[in-house]
Length: 305
Image (tube, rainbow, N blue to C red; front, side, top):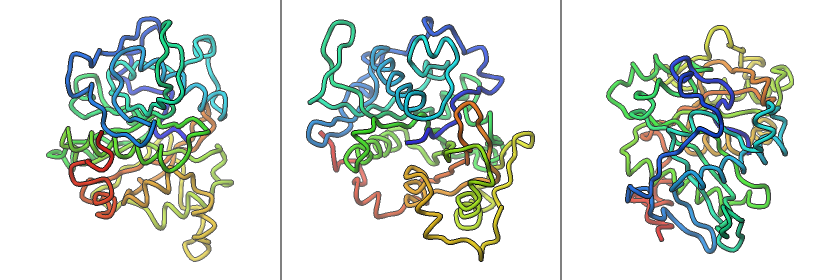
């Protein structure tokens, strides 16, 4: 699965947050009842929030395995040495985990359930206290949020699943966990950056053009790529697009957001470090397809443990 947010750059307000890897500490949610409970379970797979720094490190190791070992991201020396995908945002985000209780890993000398899937969650109230949203490094989300100043936004990122677990059960548990989190924190809209593999927009013309013509956000929900990073998505006329072929080429994660009711913003951004081309996803809660809400339950009780 591709990353969902830009993974390498921070907005200016976040620069003071970036620390030496050994210095990052995640707040220990064992002190907070809302962070300790299981959000859902299917057989041996459980979804919950990270409870401590050890949990976050397991998520970072998984992200390294997927983004750097499997995909085309280029690690710097510190990342390669640590074999963890780490940045300063990890310290202020919540981390959603899927764990396999039938597979264990050694964590500080103890056998713990293996982390096989993760998402990183950044609420607007937290982002405001710490300098802003991560996606602001690629897209002008400030104008979007000013137009919806009464709404509560959530930024999703760092989505990945270990290869043997890329199936319906794992993805369903991740989305069940996100839906429970949305309800718990009264979230009105979700944002983030979905990635297409490759950095040549012409090679991605079918995917980008399909998204531009068939999934572009209505004006009130639209946000554009930053001018200095803007890449035109409208590379083919609408009548020349083979929609079936375009959907086949799109990453599963992008198709999943479209099925939920999500839109894409205006313009793409090339991420050379990660070898991807990013588009902004905007998913208002009111646009989420009713069948998905019914599937997970209005109170996220479908997979509640």
